[in-house]
Amino acid sequence: MTTAFDPIDLRGTPLANRIAMAPMTRSRAFGPGLTPTDSTVEYYAQRATAGLIITEGIQPSPVGQGYPDTPGLHSGEQVAAWRRVTDAVHAAGGRIFAQLMHAGRIGHPSLLPDGLVPVGASPVAAAGQLFTHEGPQDLVTPRELTADEVRATIGDFAAAARNAVEAGFDGVELHGANGYLIHQFLAPNTNLRDDEWGGSPEARTRFALEVTKAVVSAIGAERTAIRISPTNAYNDIAEPLEEAELTYPALVRELDTLDLAYLHILEGGPGLRELTLALRKEYSGTLVLNAATEGPTGPGALDLIDDGVADLVSYGALFLANPDLPARLRAGGPFNTPDVATFFGGGDKGYTDYPALGG
Image (cartoon, rainbow, N blue to C red; front, side, top):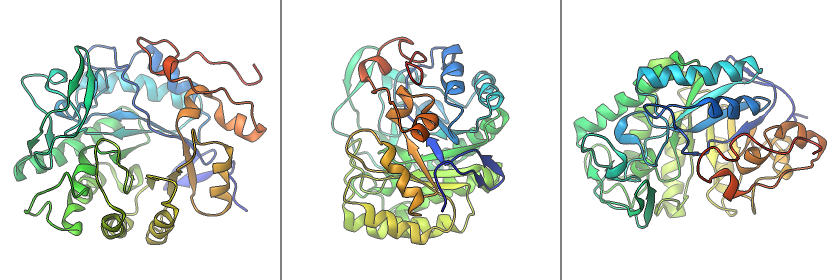
């Protein structure tokens, strides 16, 4: 029987175990030009015993930034800074994919340079506010991307993927989840287009597929992955189950033909395992699952690998508080409790300090 502690090969990238560190926005790119700092290097190197690290969301272009102090991969300065991170992770025996995240309509003009404004599939504002350096701000109505701009944005993803490889990443994960730009094209309440990029469930999958294909062409399928979150209401997405049951099997069937490194599913709620299993049947490659759980994902999620539901399980909050999480999972604990105030507070407080195993 396969267990979480067995190795696995991601199309040529060997992983020591099947426990992945999920991508988590940190807003700590305090270096010049939105670059990672020494604390970022230490943070990821500490977690190198994960079978696979998936980084925080990294914007592929300046207009893709959605939150304060998030890092990019669209400048030489950023590539050089990320190289320090990947070198440290590799020196510690780990593997690391960069998550490319274009926030789309989730952003604010005050975060963007040169008079840029957030863009989206359609001019539909998300409800709510966003924290900025000037305090909370209402989310704005995005500017709808023209057809030419859609293709230019696809090019931005491909260019950022090439930068990721130059920076030493083992691959990239496209963020098609959580209400960001790729998800905004997939969801019926944020994609009101009637051109080639919208109008039907199949047409709404086109942007996700074209971005994925462009990145495959740029860096190879073996280095390309994508994350999706069917029905996830985060960031004011309205994606009814009946719509998701049409959209996502169609998307996954096409993704399956590309022979990607993996497909990463974030379950949008505890009642969606049936949809996860249906998508699993459509996808013949490696499946990473971020399971819907009550509170932070715990040791019980490892059974998903034993049962064949997933090939890897990704952990989020528990990896923040427990950088040596694979060892703790093997030992059955103890587990440090994630502290939101510590890990998401200002500065670098709590970024790398944690009680060691047995402490």
